[in-house]
Amino acid sequence: MLNLTGKNALVTGIANNRSIAWGIAQQLHAAGANLGVTYLPDDKGRYEKKVRELVEPLQPSIFLPCNVQDDAQIDTTFEAIDKQWDKIDILIHCLAFADKEDLSGDFSNTSRQGFTTALEISTYSLTRLAAAAKPLMKEGGSIVTLTYLGGVKVIPNYNVMGIAKAGLEMSVRYLASELGSSNIRVNGISAGPIRTLASSAVGGILDMIHHVEQVAPLRRTVTQIEVGNAATFLCSDLASGITGQVLYVDAGYEIMGM
Ligand SMILES: NC(=O)c1ccc[n+]([C@@H]2O[C@H](COP(=O)([O-])OP(=O)(O)OC[C@H]3O[C@@H](n4cnc5c(N)ncnc54)[C@H](O)[C@@H]3O)[C@@H](O)[C@H]2O)c1
Image (tube, rainbow, N blue to C red; front, side, top):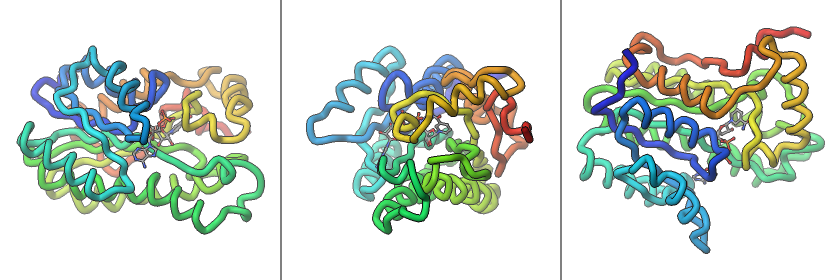
């Protein structure tokens, strides 16, 4: 039975009602998990207001700013978890960033700064958050991150984010290997293209979605809720034997050769 009652789940990466993290948060909540939510703070507090209003019906017991480029904010988040929850069972890593100019045109034009920023936020942050969560996953746990086919195969315009996702998928395996002895499972979900704030920065995203709708076995792309269902499964005891894997939630697109 898929039941997350009594489980504490920290969800990162909700920006608005199109966010994949929002689909995941709703399904974790529906399965009974107690939620904590972090958001990316900005000077004018726009994200905070939007995310706070959005998640209010799910009644998260923790709601904190957490820019993954800021070690102090990461530490504050996990100190709050230690105080309020005592233990954490689930960590959802659902965030990425690359400069818009690095998500179209020639990959070889990627700047040093653009490359570094994309990999710091999109790749390194999984390892940093996992390290912070590890001592609090006292009864074991499940970590799920979001990846994309562009980390395995060349997808036009995905460019530096493909490098970031390749590193992220390898991070899943190294973390799974290390944390398995603490009964912490680490998996990735490779989602099909979905229109979100982040994906709209990738050149030609609508063409990608239309292509998938024509070619994928299910003749459509996927929804945030479908990704949320798969994440909830991976975080449940039903997936107790699964770690170090990348699960494709992409309407089958990945199996197609032509
Ligand atoms: N949308 C798609 O087509 C698709 C497909 C496969 C994988 N993904 C992945 O799903 C994840 C979520 O993206 P999304 O499509 O839901 O878009 P989104 O824009 O809703 O989410 C991206 C999130 O990253 C957060 N973020 C960016 N920089 C941050 C930082 N420094 N610190 C903390 N948070 C930061 C943003 O605030 C936002 O909440 C990403 O890893 C993305 O690569 C998306």
